Image (tube, rainbow, N blue to C red; front, side):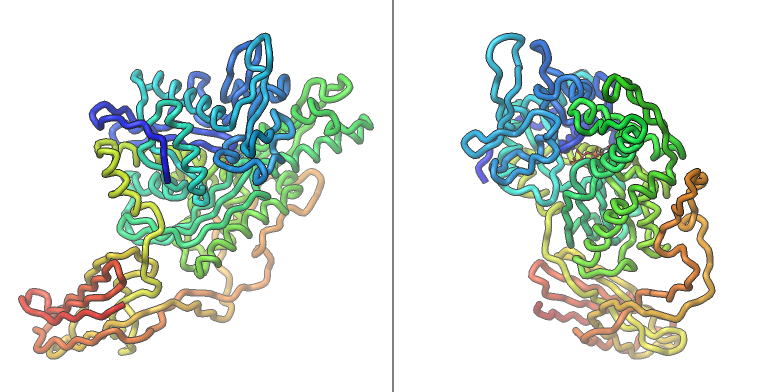
Length: 571
Ligand code: ATP
């Protein structure tokens, strides 16, 4: 990968985290090891990824977004996903109401009237990106009171090499040193794991990053602070803009009924509908009712209406179901079951929507934590996760020389080899039956070393330790009387004036469900070790080391004893 680069000496750096999205971007820094998202000069923490030109001036963020109604032709929006792509490969769906992507020798450009007078300019997507990044850097520099030199940036997991090269080049042209590009879901997981109260434990996490124009769901194994990506699903149909469209259509129809004019047929009216629909949608994430009001929507007629959350959830039902399906398909793609998932991190602006979190609550067992504002009060703002993770990573690596960062930290955040099955020991339970005790969890990135203590028989003596592979299977048992979980079955509180049936969660019906639980199955034996003459009440320590090429070394010894038994098995 050939890259244009800016290099800054570690002592000269001022670092931030940047998430550069197709809809919004954010900048973040760390203060006393805590990540903080920076508000720009307009007070915005989610800064629309938009540039607009009017009367010779350049606007960005929220101000540029307002120009989508008044000056759409000179407003460049939804350009990030075009960076590093051939013109033939881009989907211009979201650009119909702003500057259109044009083909310039196979790459994407936009024509805007940049100067007050004279000819319009053709700006390549790289140039637009550089200009936009400059604005973010300026905003962060102003906030920090010193010039930002360097950043960790987040990228989607399917961001290809060509896209990375283009992003690094655009950043270099903005005089920004990119310390590292990290995957968005890993940034989100980092943001949670860096909290003071977080326990570092082995877990499988699903990160559902639901944005404005795309949704990405990633299954991540977190093992001793090492993140391994197990599966990813990318989708361009279920996203925030699809929810906006539901509201646009709903209110356009109401307007048509009254005034016999379809406001969607006029570009300016449609832009007004879109802006108001987004505002109403966001309001519905917080309250049970929201107004919808547009001055001079079409033919000079003002329009005022309102909607409650139940009605919204009913008309947007198929989109909400789409989000649940995406998450379900990612879990399946990883070869896992809902029961294997310890946490679901809801990330991205659309994840503020309460119904999405509630529906995911039904997909997973009660043991799975759904980390979203509507289900977990302590959840981190989903719109801030990626930027916070990037800022944390930036502060961790800022003291390294650029070459060392490349070598030492790439592996920690990309796919690395991992064991498929668990490795553990066989122990006897109270009923005297053999049970599997996992020592190395499945999906653990290698090399890995884990130790357990196994109790010897009460009276001591010779102990045989069996090291085996284990895999889980799902045990299904007949229905038991249902115990109601308030948090998971909470219904939305308001009543639907239209009397529509809004209770559509999958398992709210009265049918009793079968019980599904994850149980270990003992697989093939890897090794056996005999420890002779263990003391009464003694314990045996078993250490399992899996090296980078997956060969396994097992060491067993009595706790407190100097000698033990050691053996190595090949992968
Ligand atoms: P993408 O790259 O998919 O376009 P992004 O990562 O650039 O998205 P985000 O800020 O994560 O952007 O998501 C933007 C989407 O989130 C928009 O559709 C926006 O309307 C929606 N959104 C933001 N806040 C809320 C909220 N409180 N409730 C519901 N939706 C919201």
